[in-house]
Amino acid sequence: MHHLEELEINTGPVTIRGKRWRQDGGIPTLCLHGFLDNAASFDLLAPKLKGLDLFAMDFAGHGLSDHRPLGTPYMGLSDLHEILSVADHLGWTTFSVIGHSMGAELGAQLAGLFPDRVRALVCLDGYCGTNTIEQTLDHLSSMVTSASARSSKIGRAHV
Image (cartoon, rainbow, N blue to C red; front, side, top):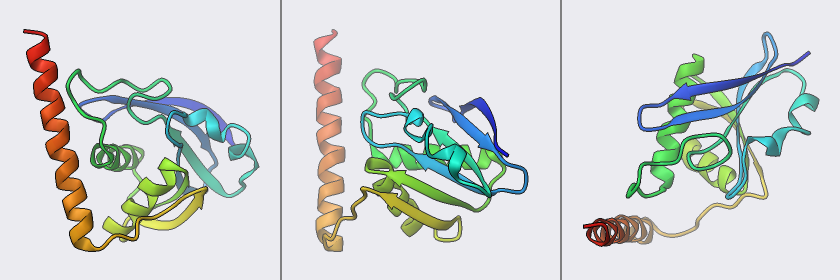
């Protein structure tokens, strides 16, 4: 039987909040919501999943979690850092992931980057990029450059 509790986890830059459906002896599982959504996405599904110790987190800027500081871009790399920080806080060296949409994309990236940490991945309405390594690197560097330019403009507008 699951025991529902609300948690608050300080990851450094932001505090992440979410819901934990704890089941003693259950498989540690992170639930990652989609874009413009929150941990409540899993309210109906989580109690039905037997044998799992589930934590559905609100990403930064979503649900009850903190927003990023002004001028700080919202990037998947920051989300990945916070996912691992949450798992570490929970004491989960390995865990499974159930991701919806954006959460599925982040779960796939997490599994690819840290296969020693992610035991299993379930993607609901998920997708994965099929770009070459060069295209991916060009895209990531363009995102960083674009975010830096926007931050600089925001800073000048307030002067």
